[in-house]
Length: 331
Image 1 (tube, one colour):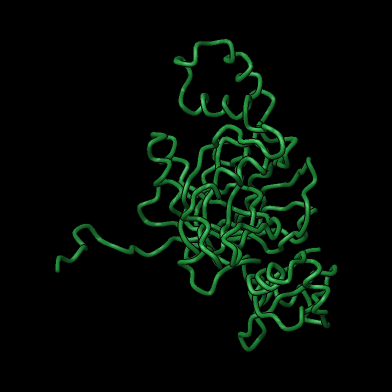
Image 2: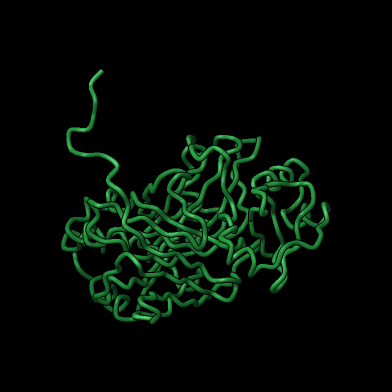
């Protein structure tokens, strides 16, 4: 089952089930979060909750896409209660990257960079098995729900940014139940979007480089993931595709299990506030920046994977200056 959130022509929010080119509107619910909390309280799965409510014929999918009326597949009415985060160095990457790691595994750990050392920890301990604690991954904070742009909308590039590049990833979507426990609704495609020039200058700038807008969706895939997933990431410019590359995900292509990544996020008590929404990016091994491409305003990113239905498309636009130097007022 795949779900979307959308707006009617009058601005009313609804949840829909994707059935090919058609959308069936879920009865009696205005948001995916509301639907998930009802399922948790009733002690049943998200799919069972949808089926218990029933659905009716809704708008055409293409009509929603063309009208820009598709919302992120999970959000919170108060953006401060939606946390956007992610984990890096989680995917095996290309064969050359793996070979490089294998050559370095025999070296003294002191000779490795911090990046390679953490990647090595993931290779050796990122899949500890069900119910066990494995190696801790790299973790980063992106922002709250206010940084999320809807599918089809433009990602803003701050004037101080040195780069605005895509990161095609899988995203886990979660709600914290009344019992203070995390519940995974499912997964979506995501564009994590970062400043790779800034990050490359110094790894200590990673935190700064991640404080950018992001997008995910348009569809929420309910249920388990295949172990091997292959999608395509593209950049369109002036009506042409200027870059295109396959990206791999799923646990067969990762050095961490999804269970391990989830544990090391939700082990923190502050992330278990009832009713909150969590959007967590699981990482990637494919970047256009690594191939010498630098995106620019006017470009469009497209991330596609057949298991997730419609592709995620977002343009790129220059943002206004939010604050000038000396702009803080003393009281």
